[in-house]
Image (cartoon, rainbow, N blue to C red; front, side, top):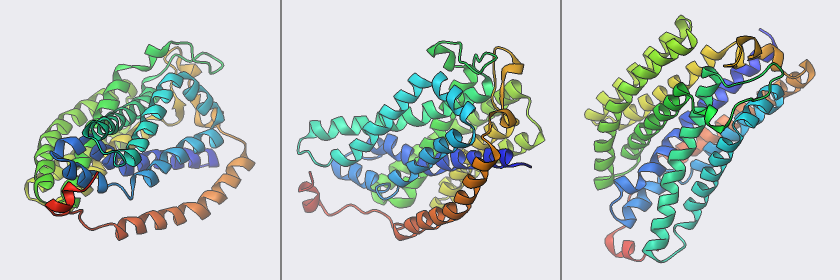
Length: 337
C-alpha cells in the first residue's frame, strides 16, 4: 500500500466521520420545531447540539481540504462538476450557522420563526446534497478524457446519487431523534422517541434499497455487502433499543448505521476516485489523481501529529457536555427572547 492509497483511506475516514458526527446535529436542526411545541422546548432541542455543531463541521472542511491537497485532479473535476450544488450546500451551511446564533437575539415570534425555518431547511439541504454528491462519485458523471465535466447541472441528479442523499437524510433524522431522546427530558424526549420509531422503520427500507441499488451500480465485492448488512443490523438494533427506552444504545447504533452507509461508497469506489459515465477509461483513479510523494509524506506527518489531538479535544467536549438539557421553570421561560 502506497501513500496515495493511505490518503484515500484517510479521506474516507474524514467524510464518514463528518456524517457520523454532523449527522445527529443535522437531525436535531431539522427536528427542533417538530419535537418542540413551544419556544422554550425548541430552545432545549437546539441547546443539545449547541456545544458541538460548529466543531463537527470542521470535519467537512478537513475532508475537502484533504482531497484538494492529496488528489488535486479529483478535487478540480468533482468541485467544478458540482459547482452549483456546492454553492447550494455552502448557502445552507451559512444560513444554518447564522440561525443558531441569531434566532435568540430577536424578540418577536416572526423573527424566531423565520430563523427556525432557516435552521430546518439548512439542516435538510446540506446533508442531502453532500450525500448526493458522494453517490455521484460511484454512479458516474460525464467526464471526458482530460477530466473535464461535459454535462449540465441536471447531470448531477443521478438516480443512485439522489437515493444516497435521501437515505443519508433519513439516517440523520433517525440519529437526531435518538440524540434528542438521550439529551432531553419530558415532552421533548417523548416526541423525539415517537418520531424515532417512525423514521427508523423508514430507514430500514431505504437502507435495503440503497444496498440493492449499489450492487447494481458498482458490483461491489464481499466486503461491501458485509458492511451494508451490518448497517442494516445497526438500524434494526437502534429501533429495538428505542422501544426498550435504551437511549444511549439507540443513539450509538444509529451512529454506526450512518457511518456504515457512507463508508461502502468509498469501499466500492476504489481504485477509482470518480467514475466517468461517458467512458470507463476516463474515470479518475487513486494512482492517477494523487499528488507527489513528497507532498503526501508531509501531509502524513502533519496528520499523524494533529489528528489524535483533535480526537482527544473533541472527545473531551462530549464528556464535558454529556448531561441532559433541562428547560427552566415556567416564569423563567416567559422571560426568554
